[in-house]
Amino acid sequence: MNKRLIKIFTWMLLLVSIPVMGAKTDLLMLLPGFPGTTEQAQPYVETMLRYIEKDLKLESGTMHGTFISDGTKAEAKLSEVKPGIALLGPSVYAKNSSDKTMKIVAKLFILGQEEQKYYLVTKNDGADSISDFADKTVSGVIVHDEKFVKNVIFDKGAPDSIIYKFNKRPLKALRDVASGTIDGALIDSATKEHMDTLDFAKDLKIIYTSKPVPPPVIVVLNDSVKDAAKIKKSLTSICKTPEGKKLCNSLTISNIAPASDRDYSELVKKYNR
Image (cartoon, rainbow, N blue to C red; front, side, top):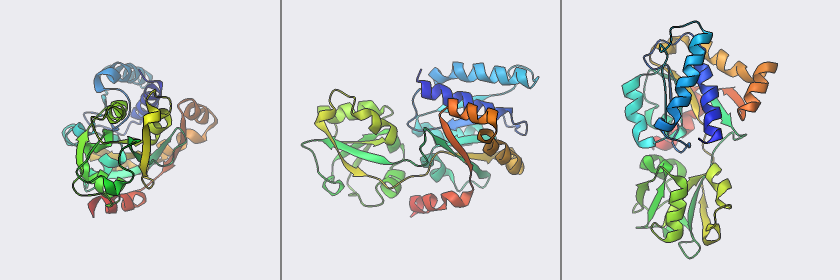
């Protein structure tokens, strides 16, 4: 199990201790591109939920939490589960921002990243620019939402005839590029940092870098919207106390900053243009 994922689970499940939530599933984490599957994560989710229930003197099994890294399942899960608090990747938020029950309370900076960039990777003998990608195939985790890729990541500057192929494993997308199976892989900053360690890295090149994209966002929704101010205060104070700061550092969280719908309005505007 990826240590980064375990740490994020540990921290996010602490949020369930905020007692204002009453939704059937208290916490929903929809993070396209993050490592691990729902099945792999569930034992860690359950362990932490049982710990929190004991700490709050609640009956065991009364709290629920779910993690999903597959963006193709995110939208359906959000409407099906109706959580009280959700941590959403920017692509998931942009697509669902019109939901009137949803309100942003904070944004989460992980591993020192206050924003995200995406990179289009090809073989050394492949296309040299995004304008040369007409009728070529682009694969990647974020390709679960073509509109997000076209309007936000590619900033409406890519050929309309690009073929998009979802791949929930970013390293496989890079391998497919190296083997010539696909023309390009769209990866995030974390994958880019790891790319140089791959044995076929010498065969790859980056031909496009996106503009910065906002970090994952924390929202309250459904019945918890009425308690948004209380939840926001709780979340944004965690890293400011001596004990909380130590906790945040141990979980690789650099900051939990207050945020509002306005902070993500430009993202939504780009997505919907």
